[in-house]
Image (tube, rainbow, N blue to C red; front, side):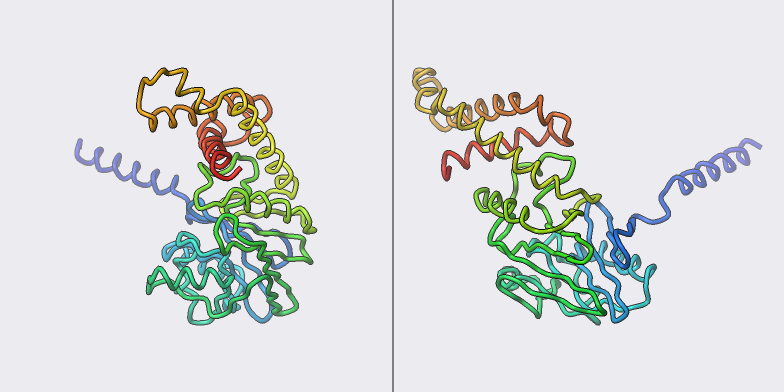
Length: 303
C-alpha cells in the first residue's frame, strides 16, 4: 500500500514538473507584418518573411539555431534565403550551418576576415561581404545593412528595415538597462560615435540581440548616460590624480596596487553620483561599477 502511494506521489510530482516546464524554450514576437523577433537563452534574432523566402539574422549557436529554424517553420514554409551576421563574435554566428543548405550568408568584410582567421570549420564563412552598406531586396522587402566603423567590434552593422522603421544594432544599447558589464570588445570612443550616428536614422523600434524591443529614445538615453559618466569621471580626476593618491599613501603599497585603488575609488564615486538619475535602470547595482571602471581607464589612456 505504501509503495503504491509513493509511486502515485512520484508520478504526480513528475507530471507537475512537466506541467511547469515551458512547452518550448523560445518565443516569437510579431513586430510588423512579416517581421518577427525570435528569442531564446538571452539571445534574440530578427527574421523577415517574404513570398520568395526568409531573411534571417544571427544564428547564435548550433542548439539555438535548431530552435530558430523550428520557430521560422512555425510561421512559414518559405526557406531561409539570406542569413545576416550582425558582427563576427562567435556567440552570435556559430549556428549558421543549420541554414547553409538554402541560404547565402552576408556580413561586413571585417567579419569574414575575422571568422577565417579564427579557423573554426563549423562556422559558415559569409559569401557576400561589403564595406559600408549593402541592400537585400527579396519578395518586395528591403533590408539595409549600414556600417559606421568599429564600435562593439570592427564588423558590427546596423540592420535597418526602412519601411517598418525597425533597426537592429546588436550589443550596443540595452533598453531599460545600463550597458553590459565592462563593454567587452568595445572601442569606447568609436562606440560613442556610432551611437550619435544612429540618431540620424529614422526608426521607431530598436532591437539589440538580447531581449525585448525598445524605442529610439534609448539611444538618446545611452548618450546622456555616457556623457554624464564621462563628465563625472573627469571631474573626479581633476579633484584627485593618481600621483596625489600615491603621495597620500606615502609609499604604502606597490604602485600597481595603488593604481587599482585609484581606478576603483574614482569609479565608485562616479557611480554614486549617477545613482539618483540612473539607479532604477536594470543592472545598475551590478554593471554600473564595471561601466565606470572602463570609462576611468578609457579617459586615462585615450580620453
